[in-house]
Image (tube, rainbow, N blue to C red; front, side):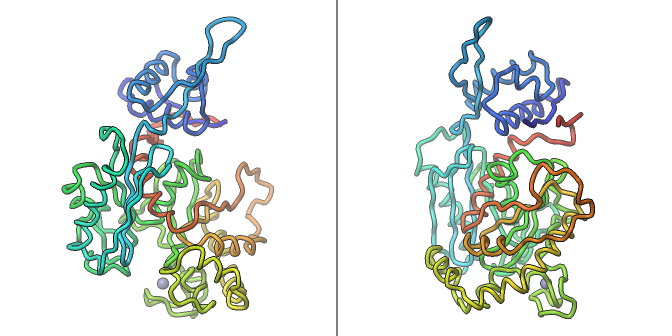
Amino acid sequence: MKAISGTNLEQAKSHNRRVVIEAVRTNGPLSRAAIARMTALTAQTVSNIVEELERSHLLVPSEAQKLARGQPIIPYTINPRGAYSIGLELGRQRASGVLTDLSGTVCARIERHVEHPDPQRAMPALQAIVEDLQQAFAFDRNRLLGVGMALPGRYADGGTTSLSPLNLPGWQGFPVGHELEQRVKVPVLVENDATAAAIGERLHGVARGLGSFVYLFLAGGGGIGAGMFLDGHLYKGSRNNAGEIGHIIVEPHGKLCSCGKRGCLDRYLSPAVAYEFMGIANAEELLPDDLDALIAKGGKGLDAWLDQAVQPLRQTVDFLELAFDPQTIVLGGSISTSLMLRLAERLEPLHTPIDPNQKRTVPRVMIGMTGKDTAILGAAALPIFSETNPRFDVLQKPLG
Ligand SMILES: [Zn+2]
């Protein structure tokens, strides 16, 4: 069992509230006494917070456990229907949105075709999706935390301006978060797809409860990025562009990359390269089942891709471990699930760690969410994360 410790200072009320939510989400159901033990908060503080969270419908009591002596114990769990979030994603020809509850379960989904999605065409479409999602499912609108959006590409200072996402023209310098917020009247958070997916994994997936991990996002349409969750917070870099790992050189003088350099990781490991090797021309337009069928009989092309992709992947894992000392590296992304599984089968043996005898509590590499919903569910996780994740920088002592 793991939890994050809290602090009893009055001004840290919001932090303590987050610590309690996190403890129950990661370890629940938990009684008040158990929460107090795990978070190092006083019984009185925990009681106050639990009462407040129960009033705001975020925690619900489950059935009381009767004891031979004394008061029965009431365990609390997260109420999935206590809050909602909307995730948006913009692709080359479509805009999509999901409404999820606090547990990440999809309650409604909308997809729209948008020809040439420049800001003039895409913004009204995204606004309509946000409005229609709220009509598509019956819930208390006051419980909508906000909208998260996953947008591939680089970001300008401040994080809300997208700079030339490679395949979406017209977005240079456009303040997408701010503009969307004006339209939909709820908070909007924008992140690149790798960071959004990392947050999704932290909230609902294999990285639940982890303080440090690096998420390697393999985009189905091509491109590789890393989301870095280190020491309890997102690491975004000095200009919000940390994690552009697809463009580290793994093969000096190797294949020419779209960035102008030669031998970038992207040119070996990207799913787009796998489809090139297999002779699949229109992978992005295929239904997942049809794509899986083509991968299943991928034959020599698939083997040839794996042969030249696996060594750069091992090198990348080695580099990320040595540079960031994470608890684990999560492989995921909008890559087809069956392609990821073929890659994962070939990954071992990894390079020998620098300290092979170091005790590990989680595997060196874990497989996270894959498939085309990965980024959009990550986007929906952004407002939930922002509302409920403890800010680790005000922590006093983590509990083992
Ligand atoms: Zn490159």
